[in-house]
Length: 216
Ligand code: DX5
Ligand code: ZN
Image (cartoon, rainbow, N blue to C red; front, side, top):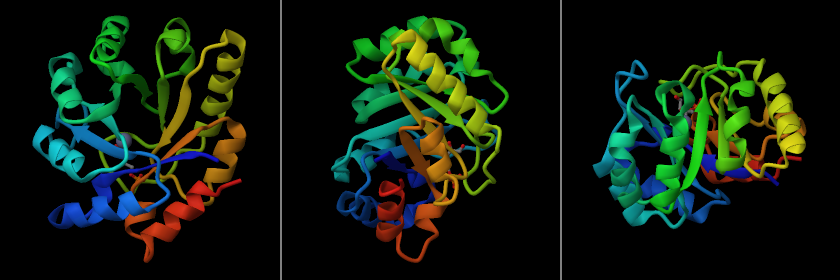
């Protein structure tokens, strides 16, 4: 069974507590929290206060995805705001190894995200140091975009690198995930699925999460 991490970017921000409580009752494993700074990506989402507010009501661990430049400046703040997983972008970290060590020292699980154009091979020398690789299956910045098909090839390659290296990390897919691409993603080697619009824009989000969770 995949791990499911619904993205609260697609929640109703005016009813955030209601939506977080819905996720508490659901079969979701994590809550995916998208932080966008208007610099690394062309959109601004929300910051620490909202992350803290979600954490006050969340009964599932927070999976925080930092789409920001110079994430080192804010790692401690997001850890204090409740992040269990902290994922930084490969493209935003010139000293990725140091950043990953810093996340571990704070007691969180380090993840590294790759934009659609970034080859998975670039992670070869950090695979044994990280808990998770997030493969972006859309260009980061917005919910509701169309899944990029080349993602399957990247997942297969990364899963092969994992077998060969003996490293132990989760493969998370983020962007345009739905019940159609979930089965082939799992078959390719994915462990964890993020879903924003597919969950929150559906008539019955609890059932939609259950469908994703029970993907075979
Ligand atoms: C995109 C974010 C995603 C987004 C996914 O930049 O990283 O987590 O919320 O939303 P959907 O599932 O609607 O593509
Ligand atoms: Zn995300």
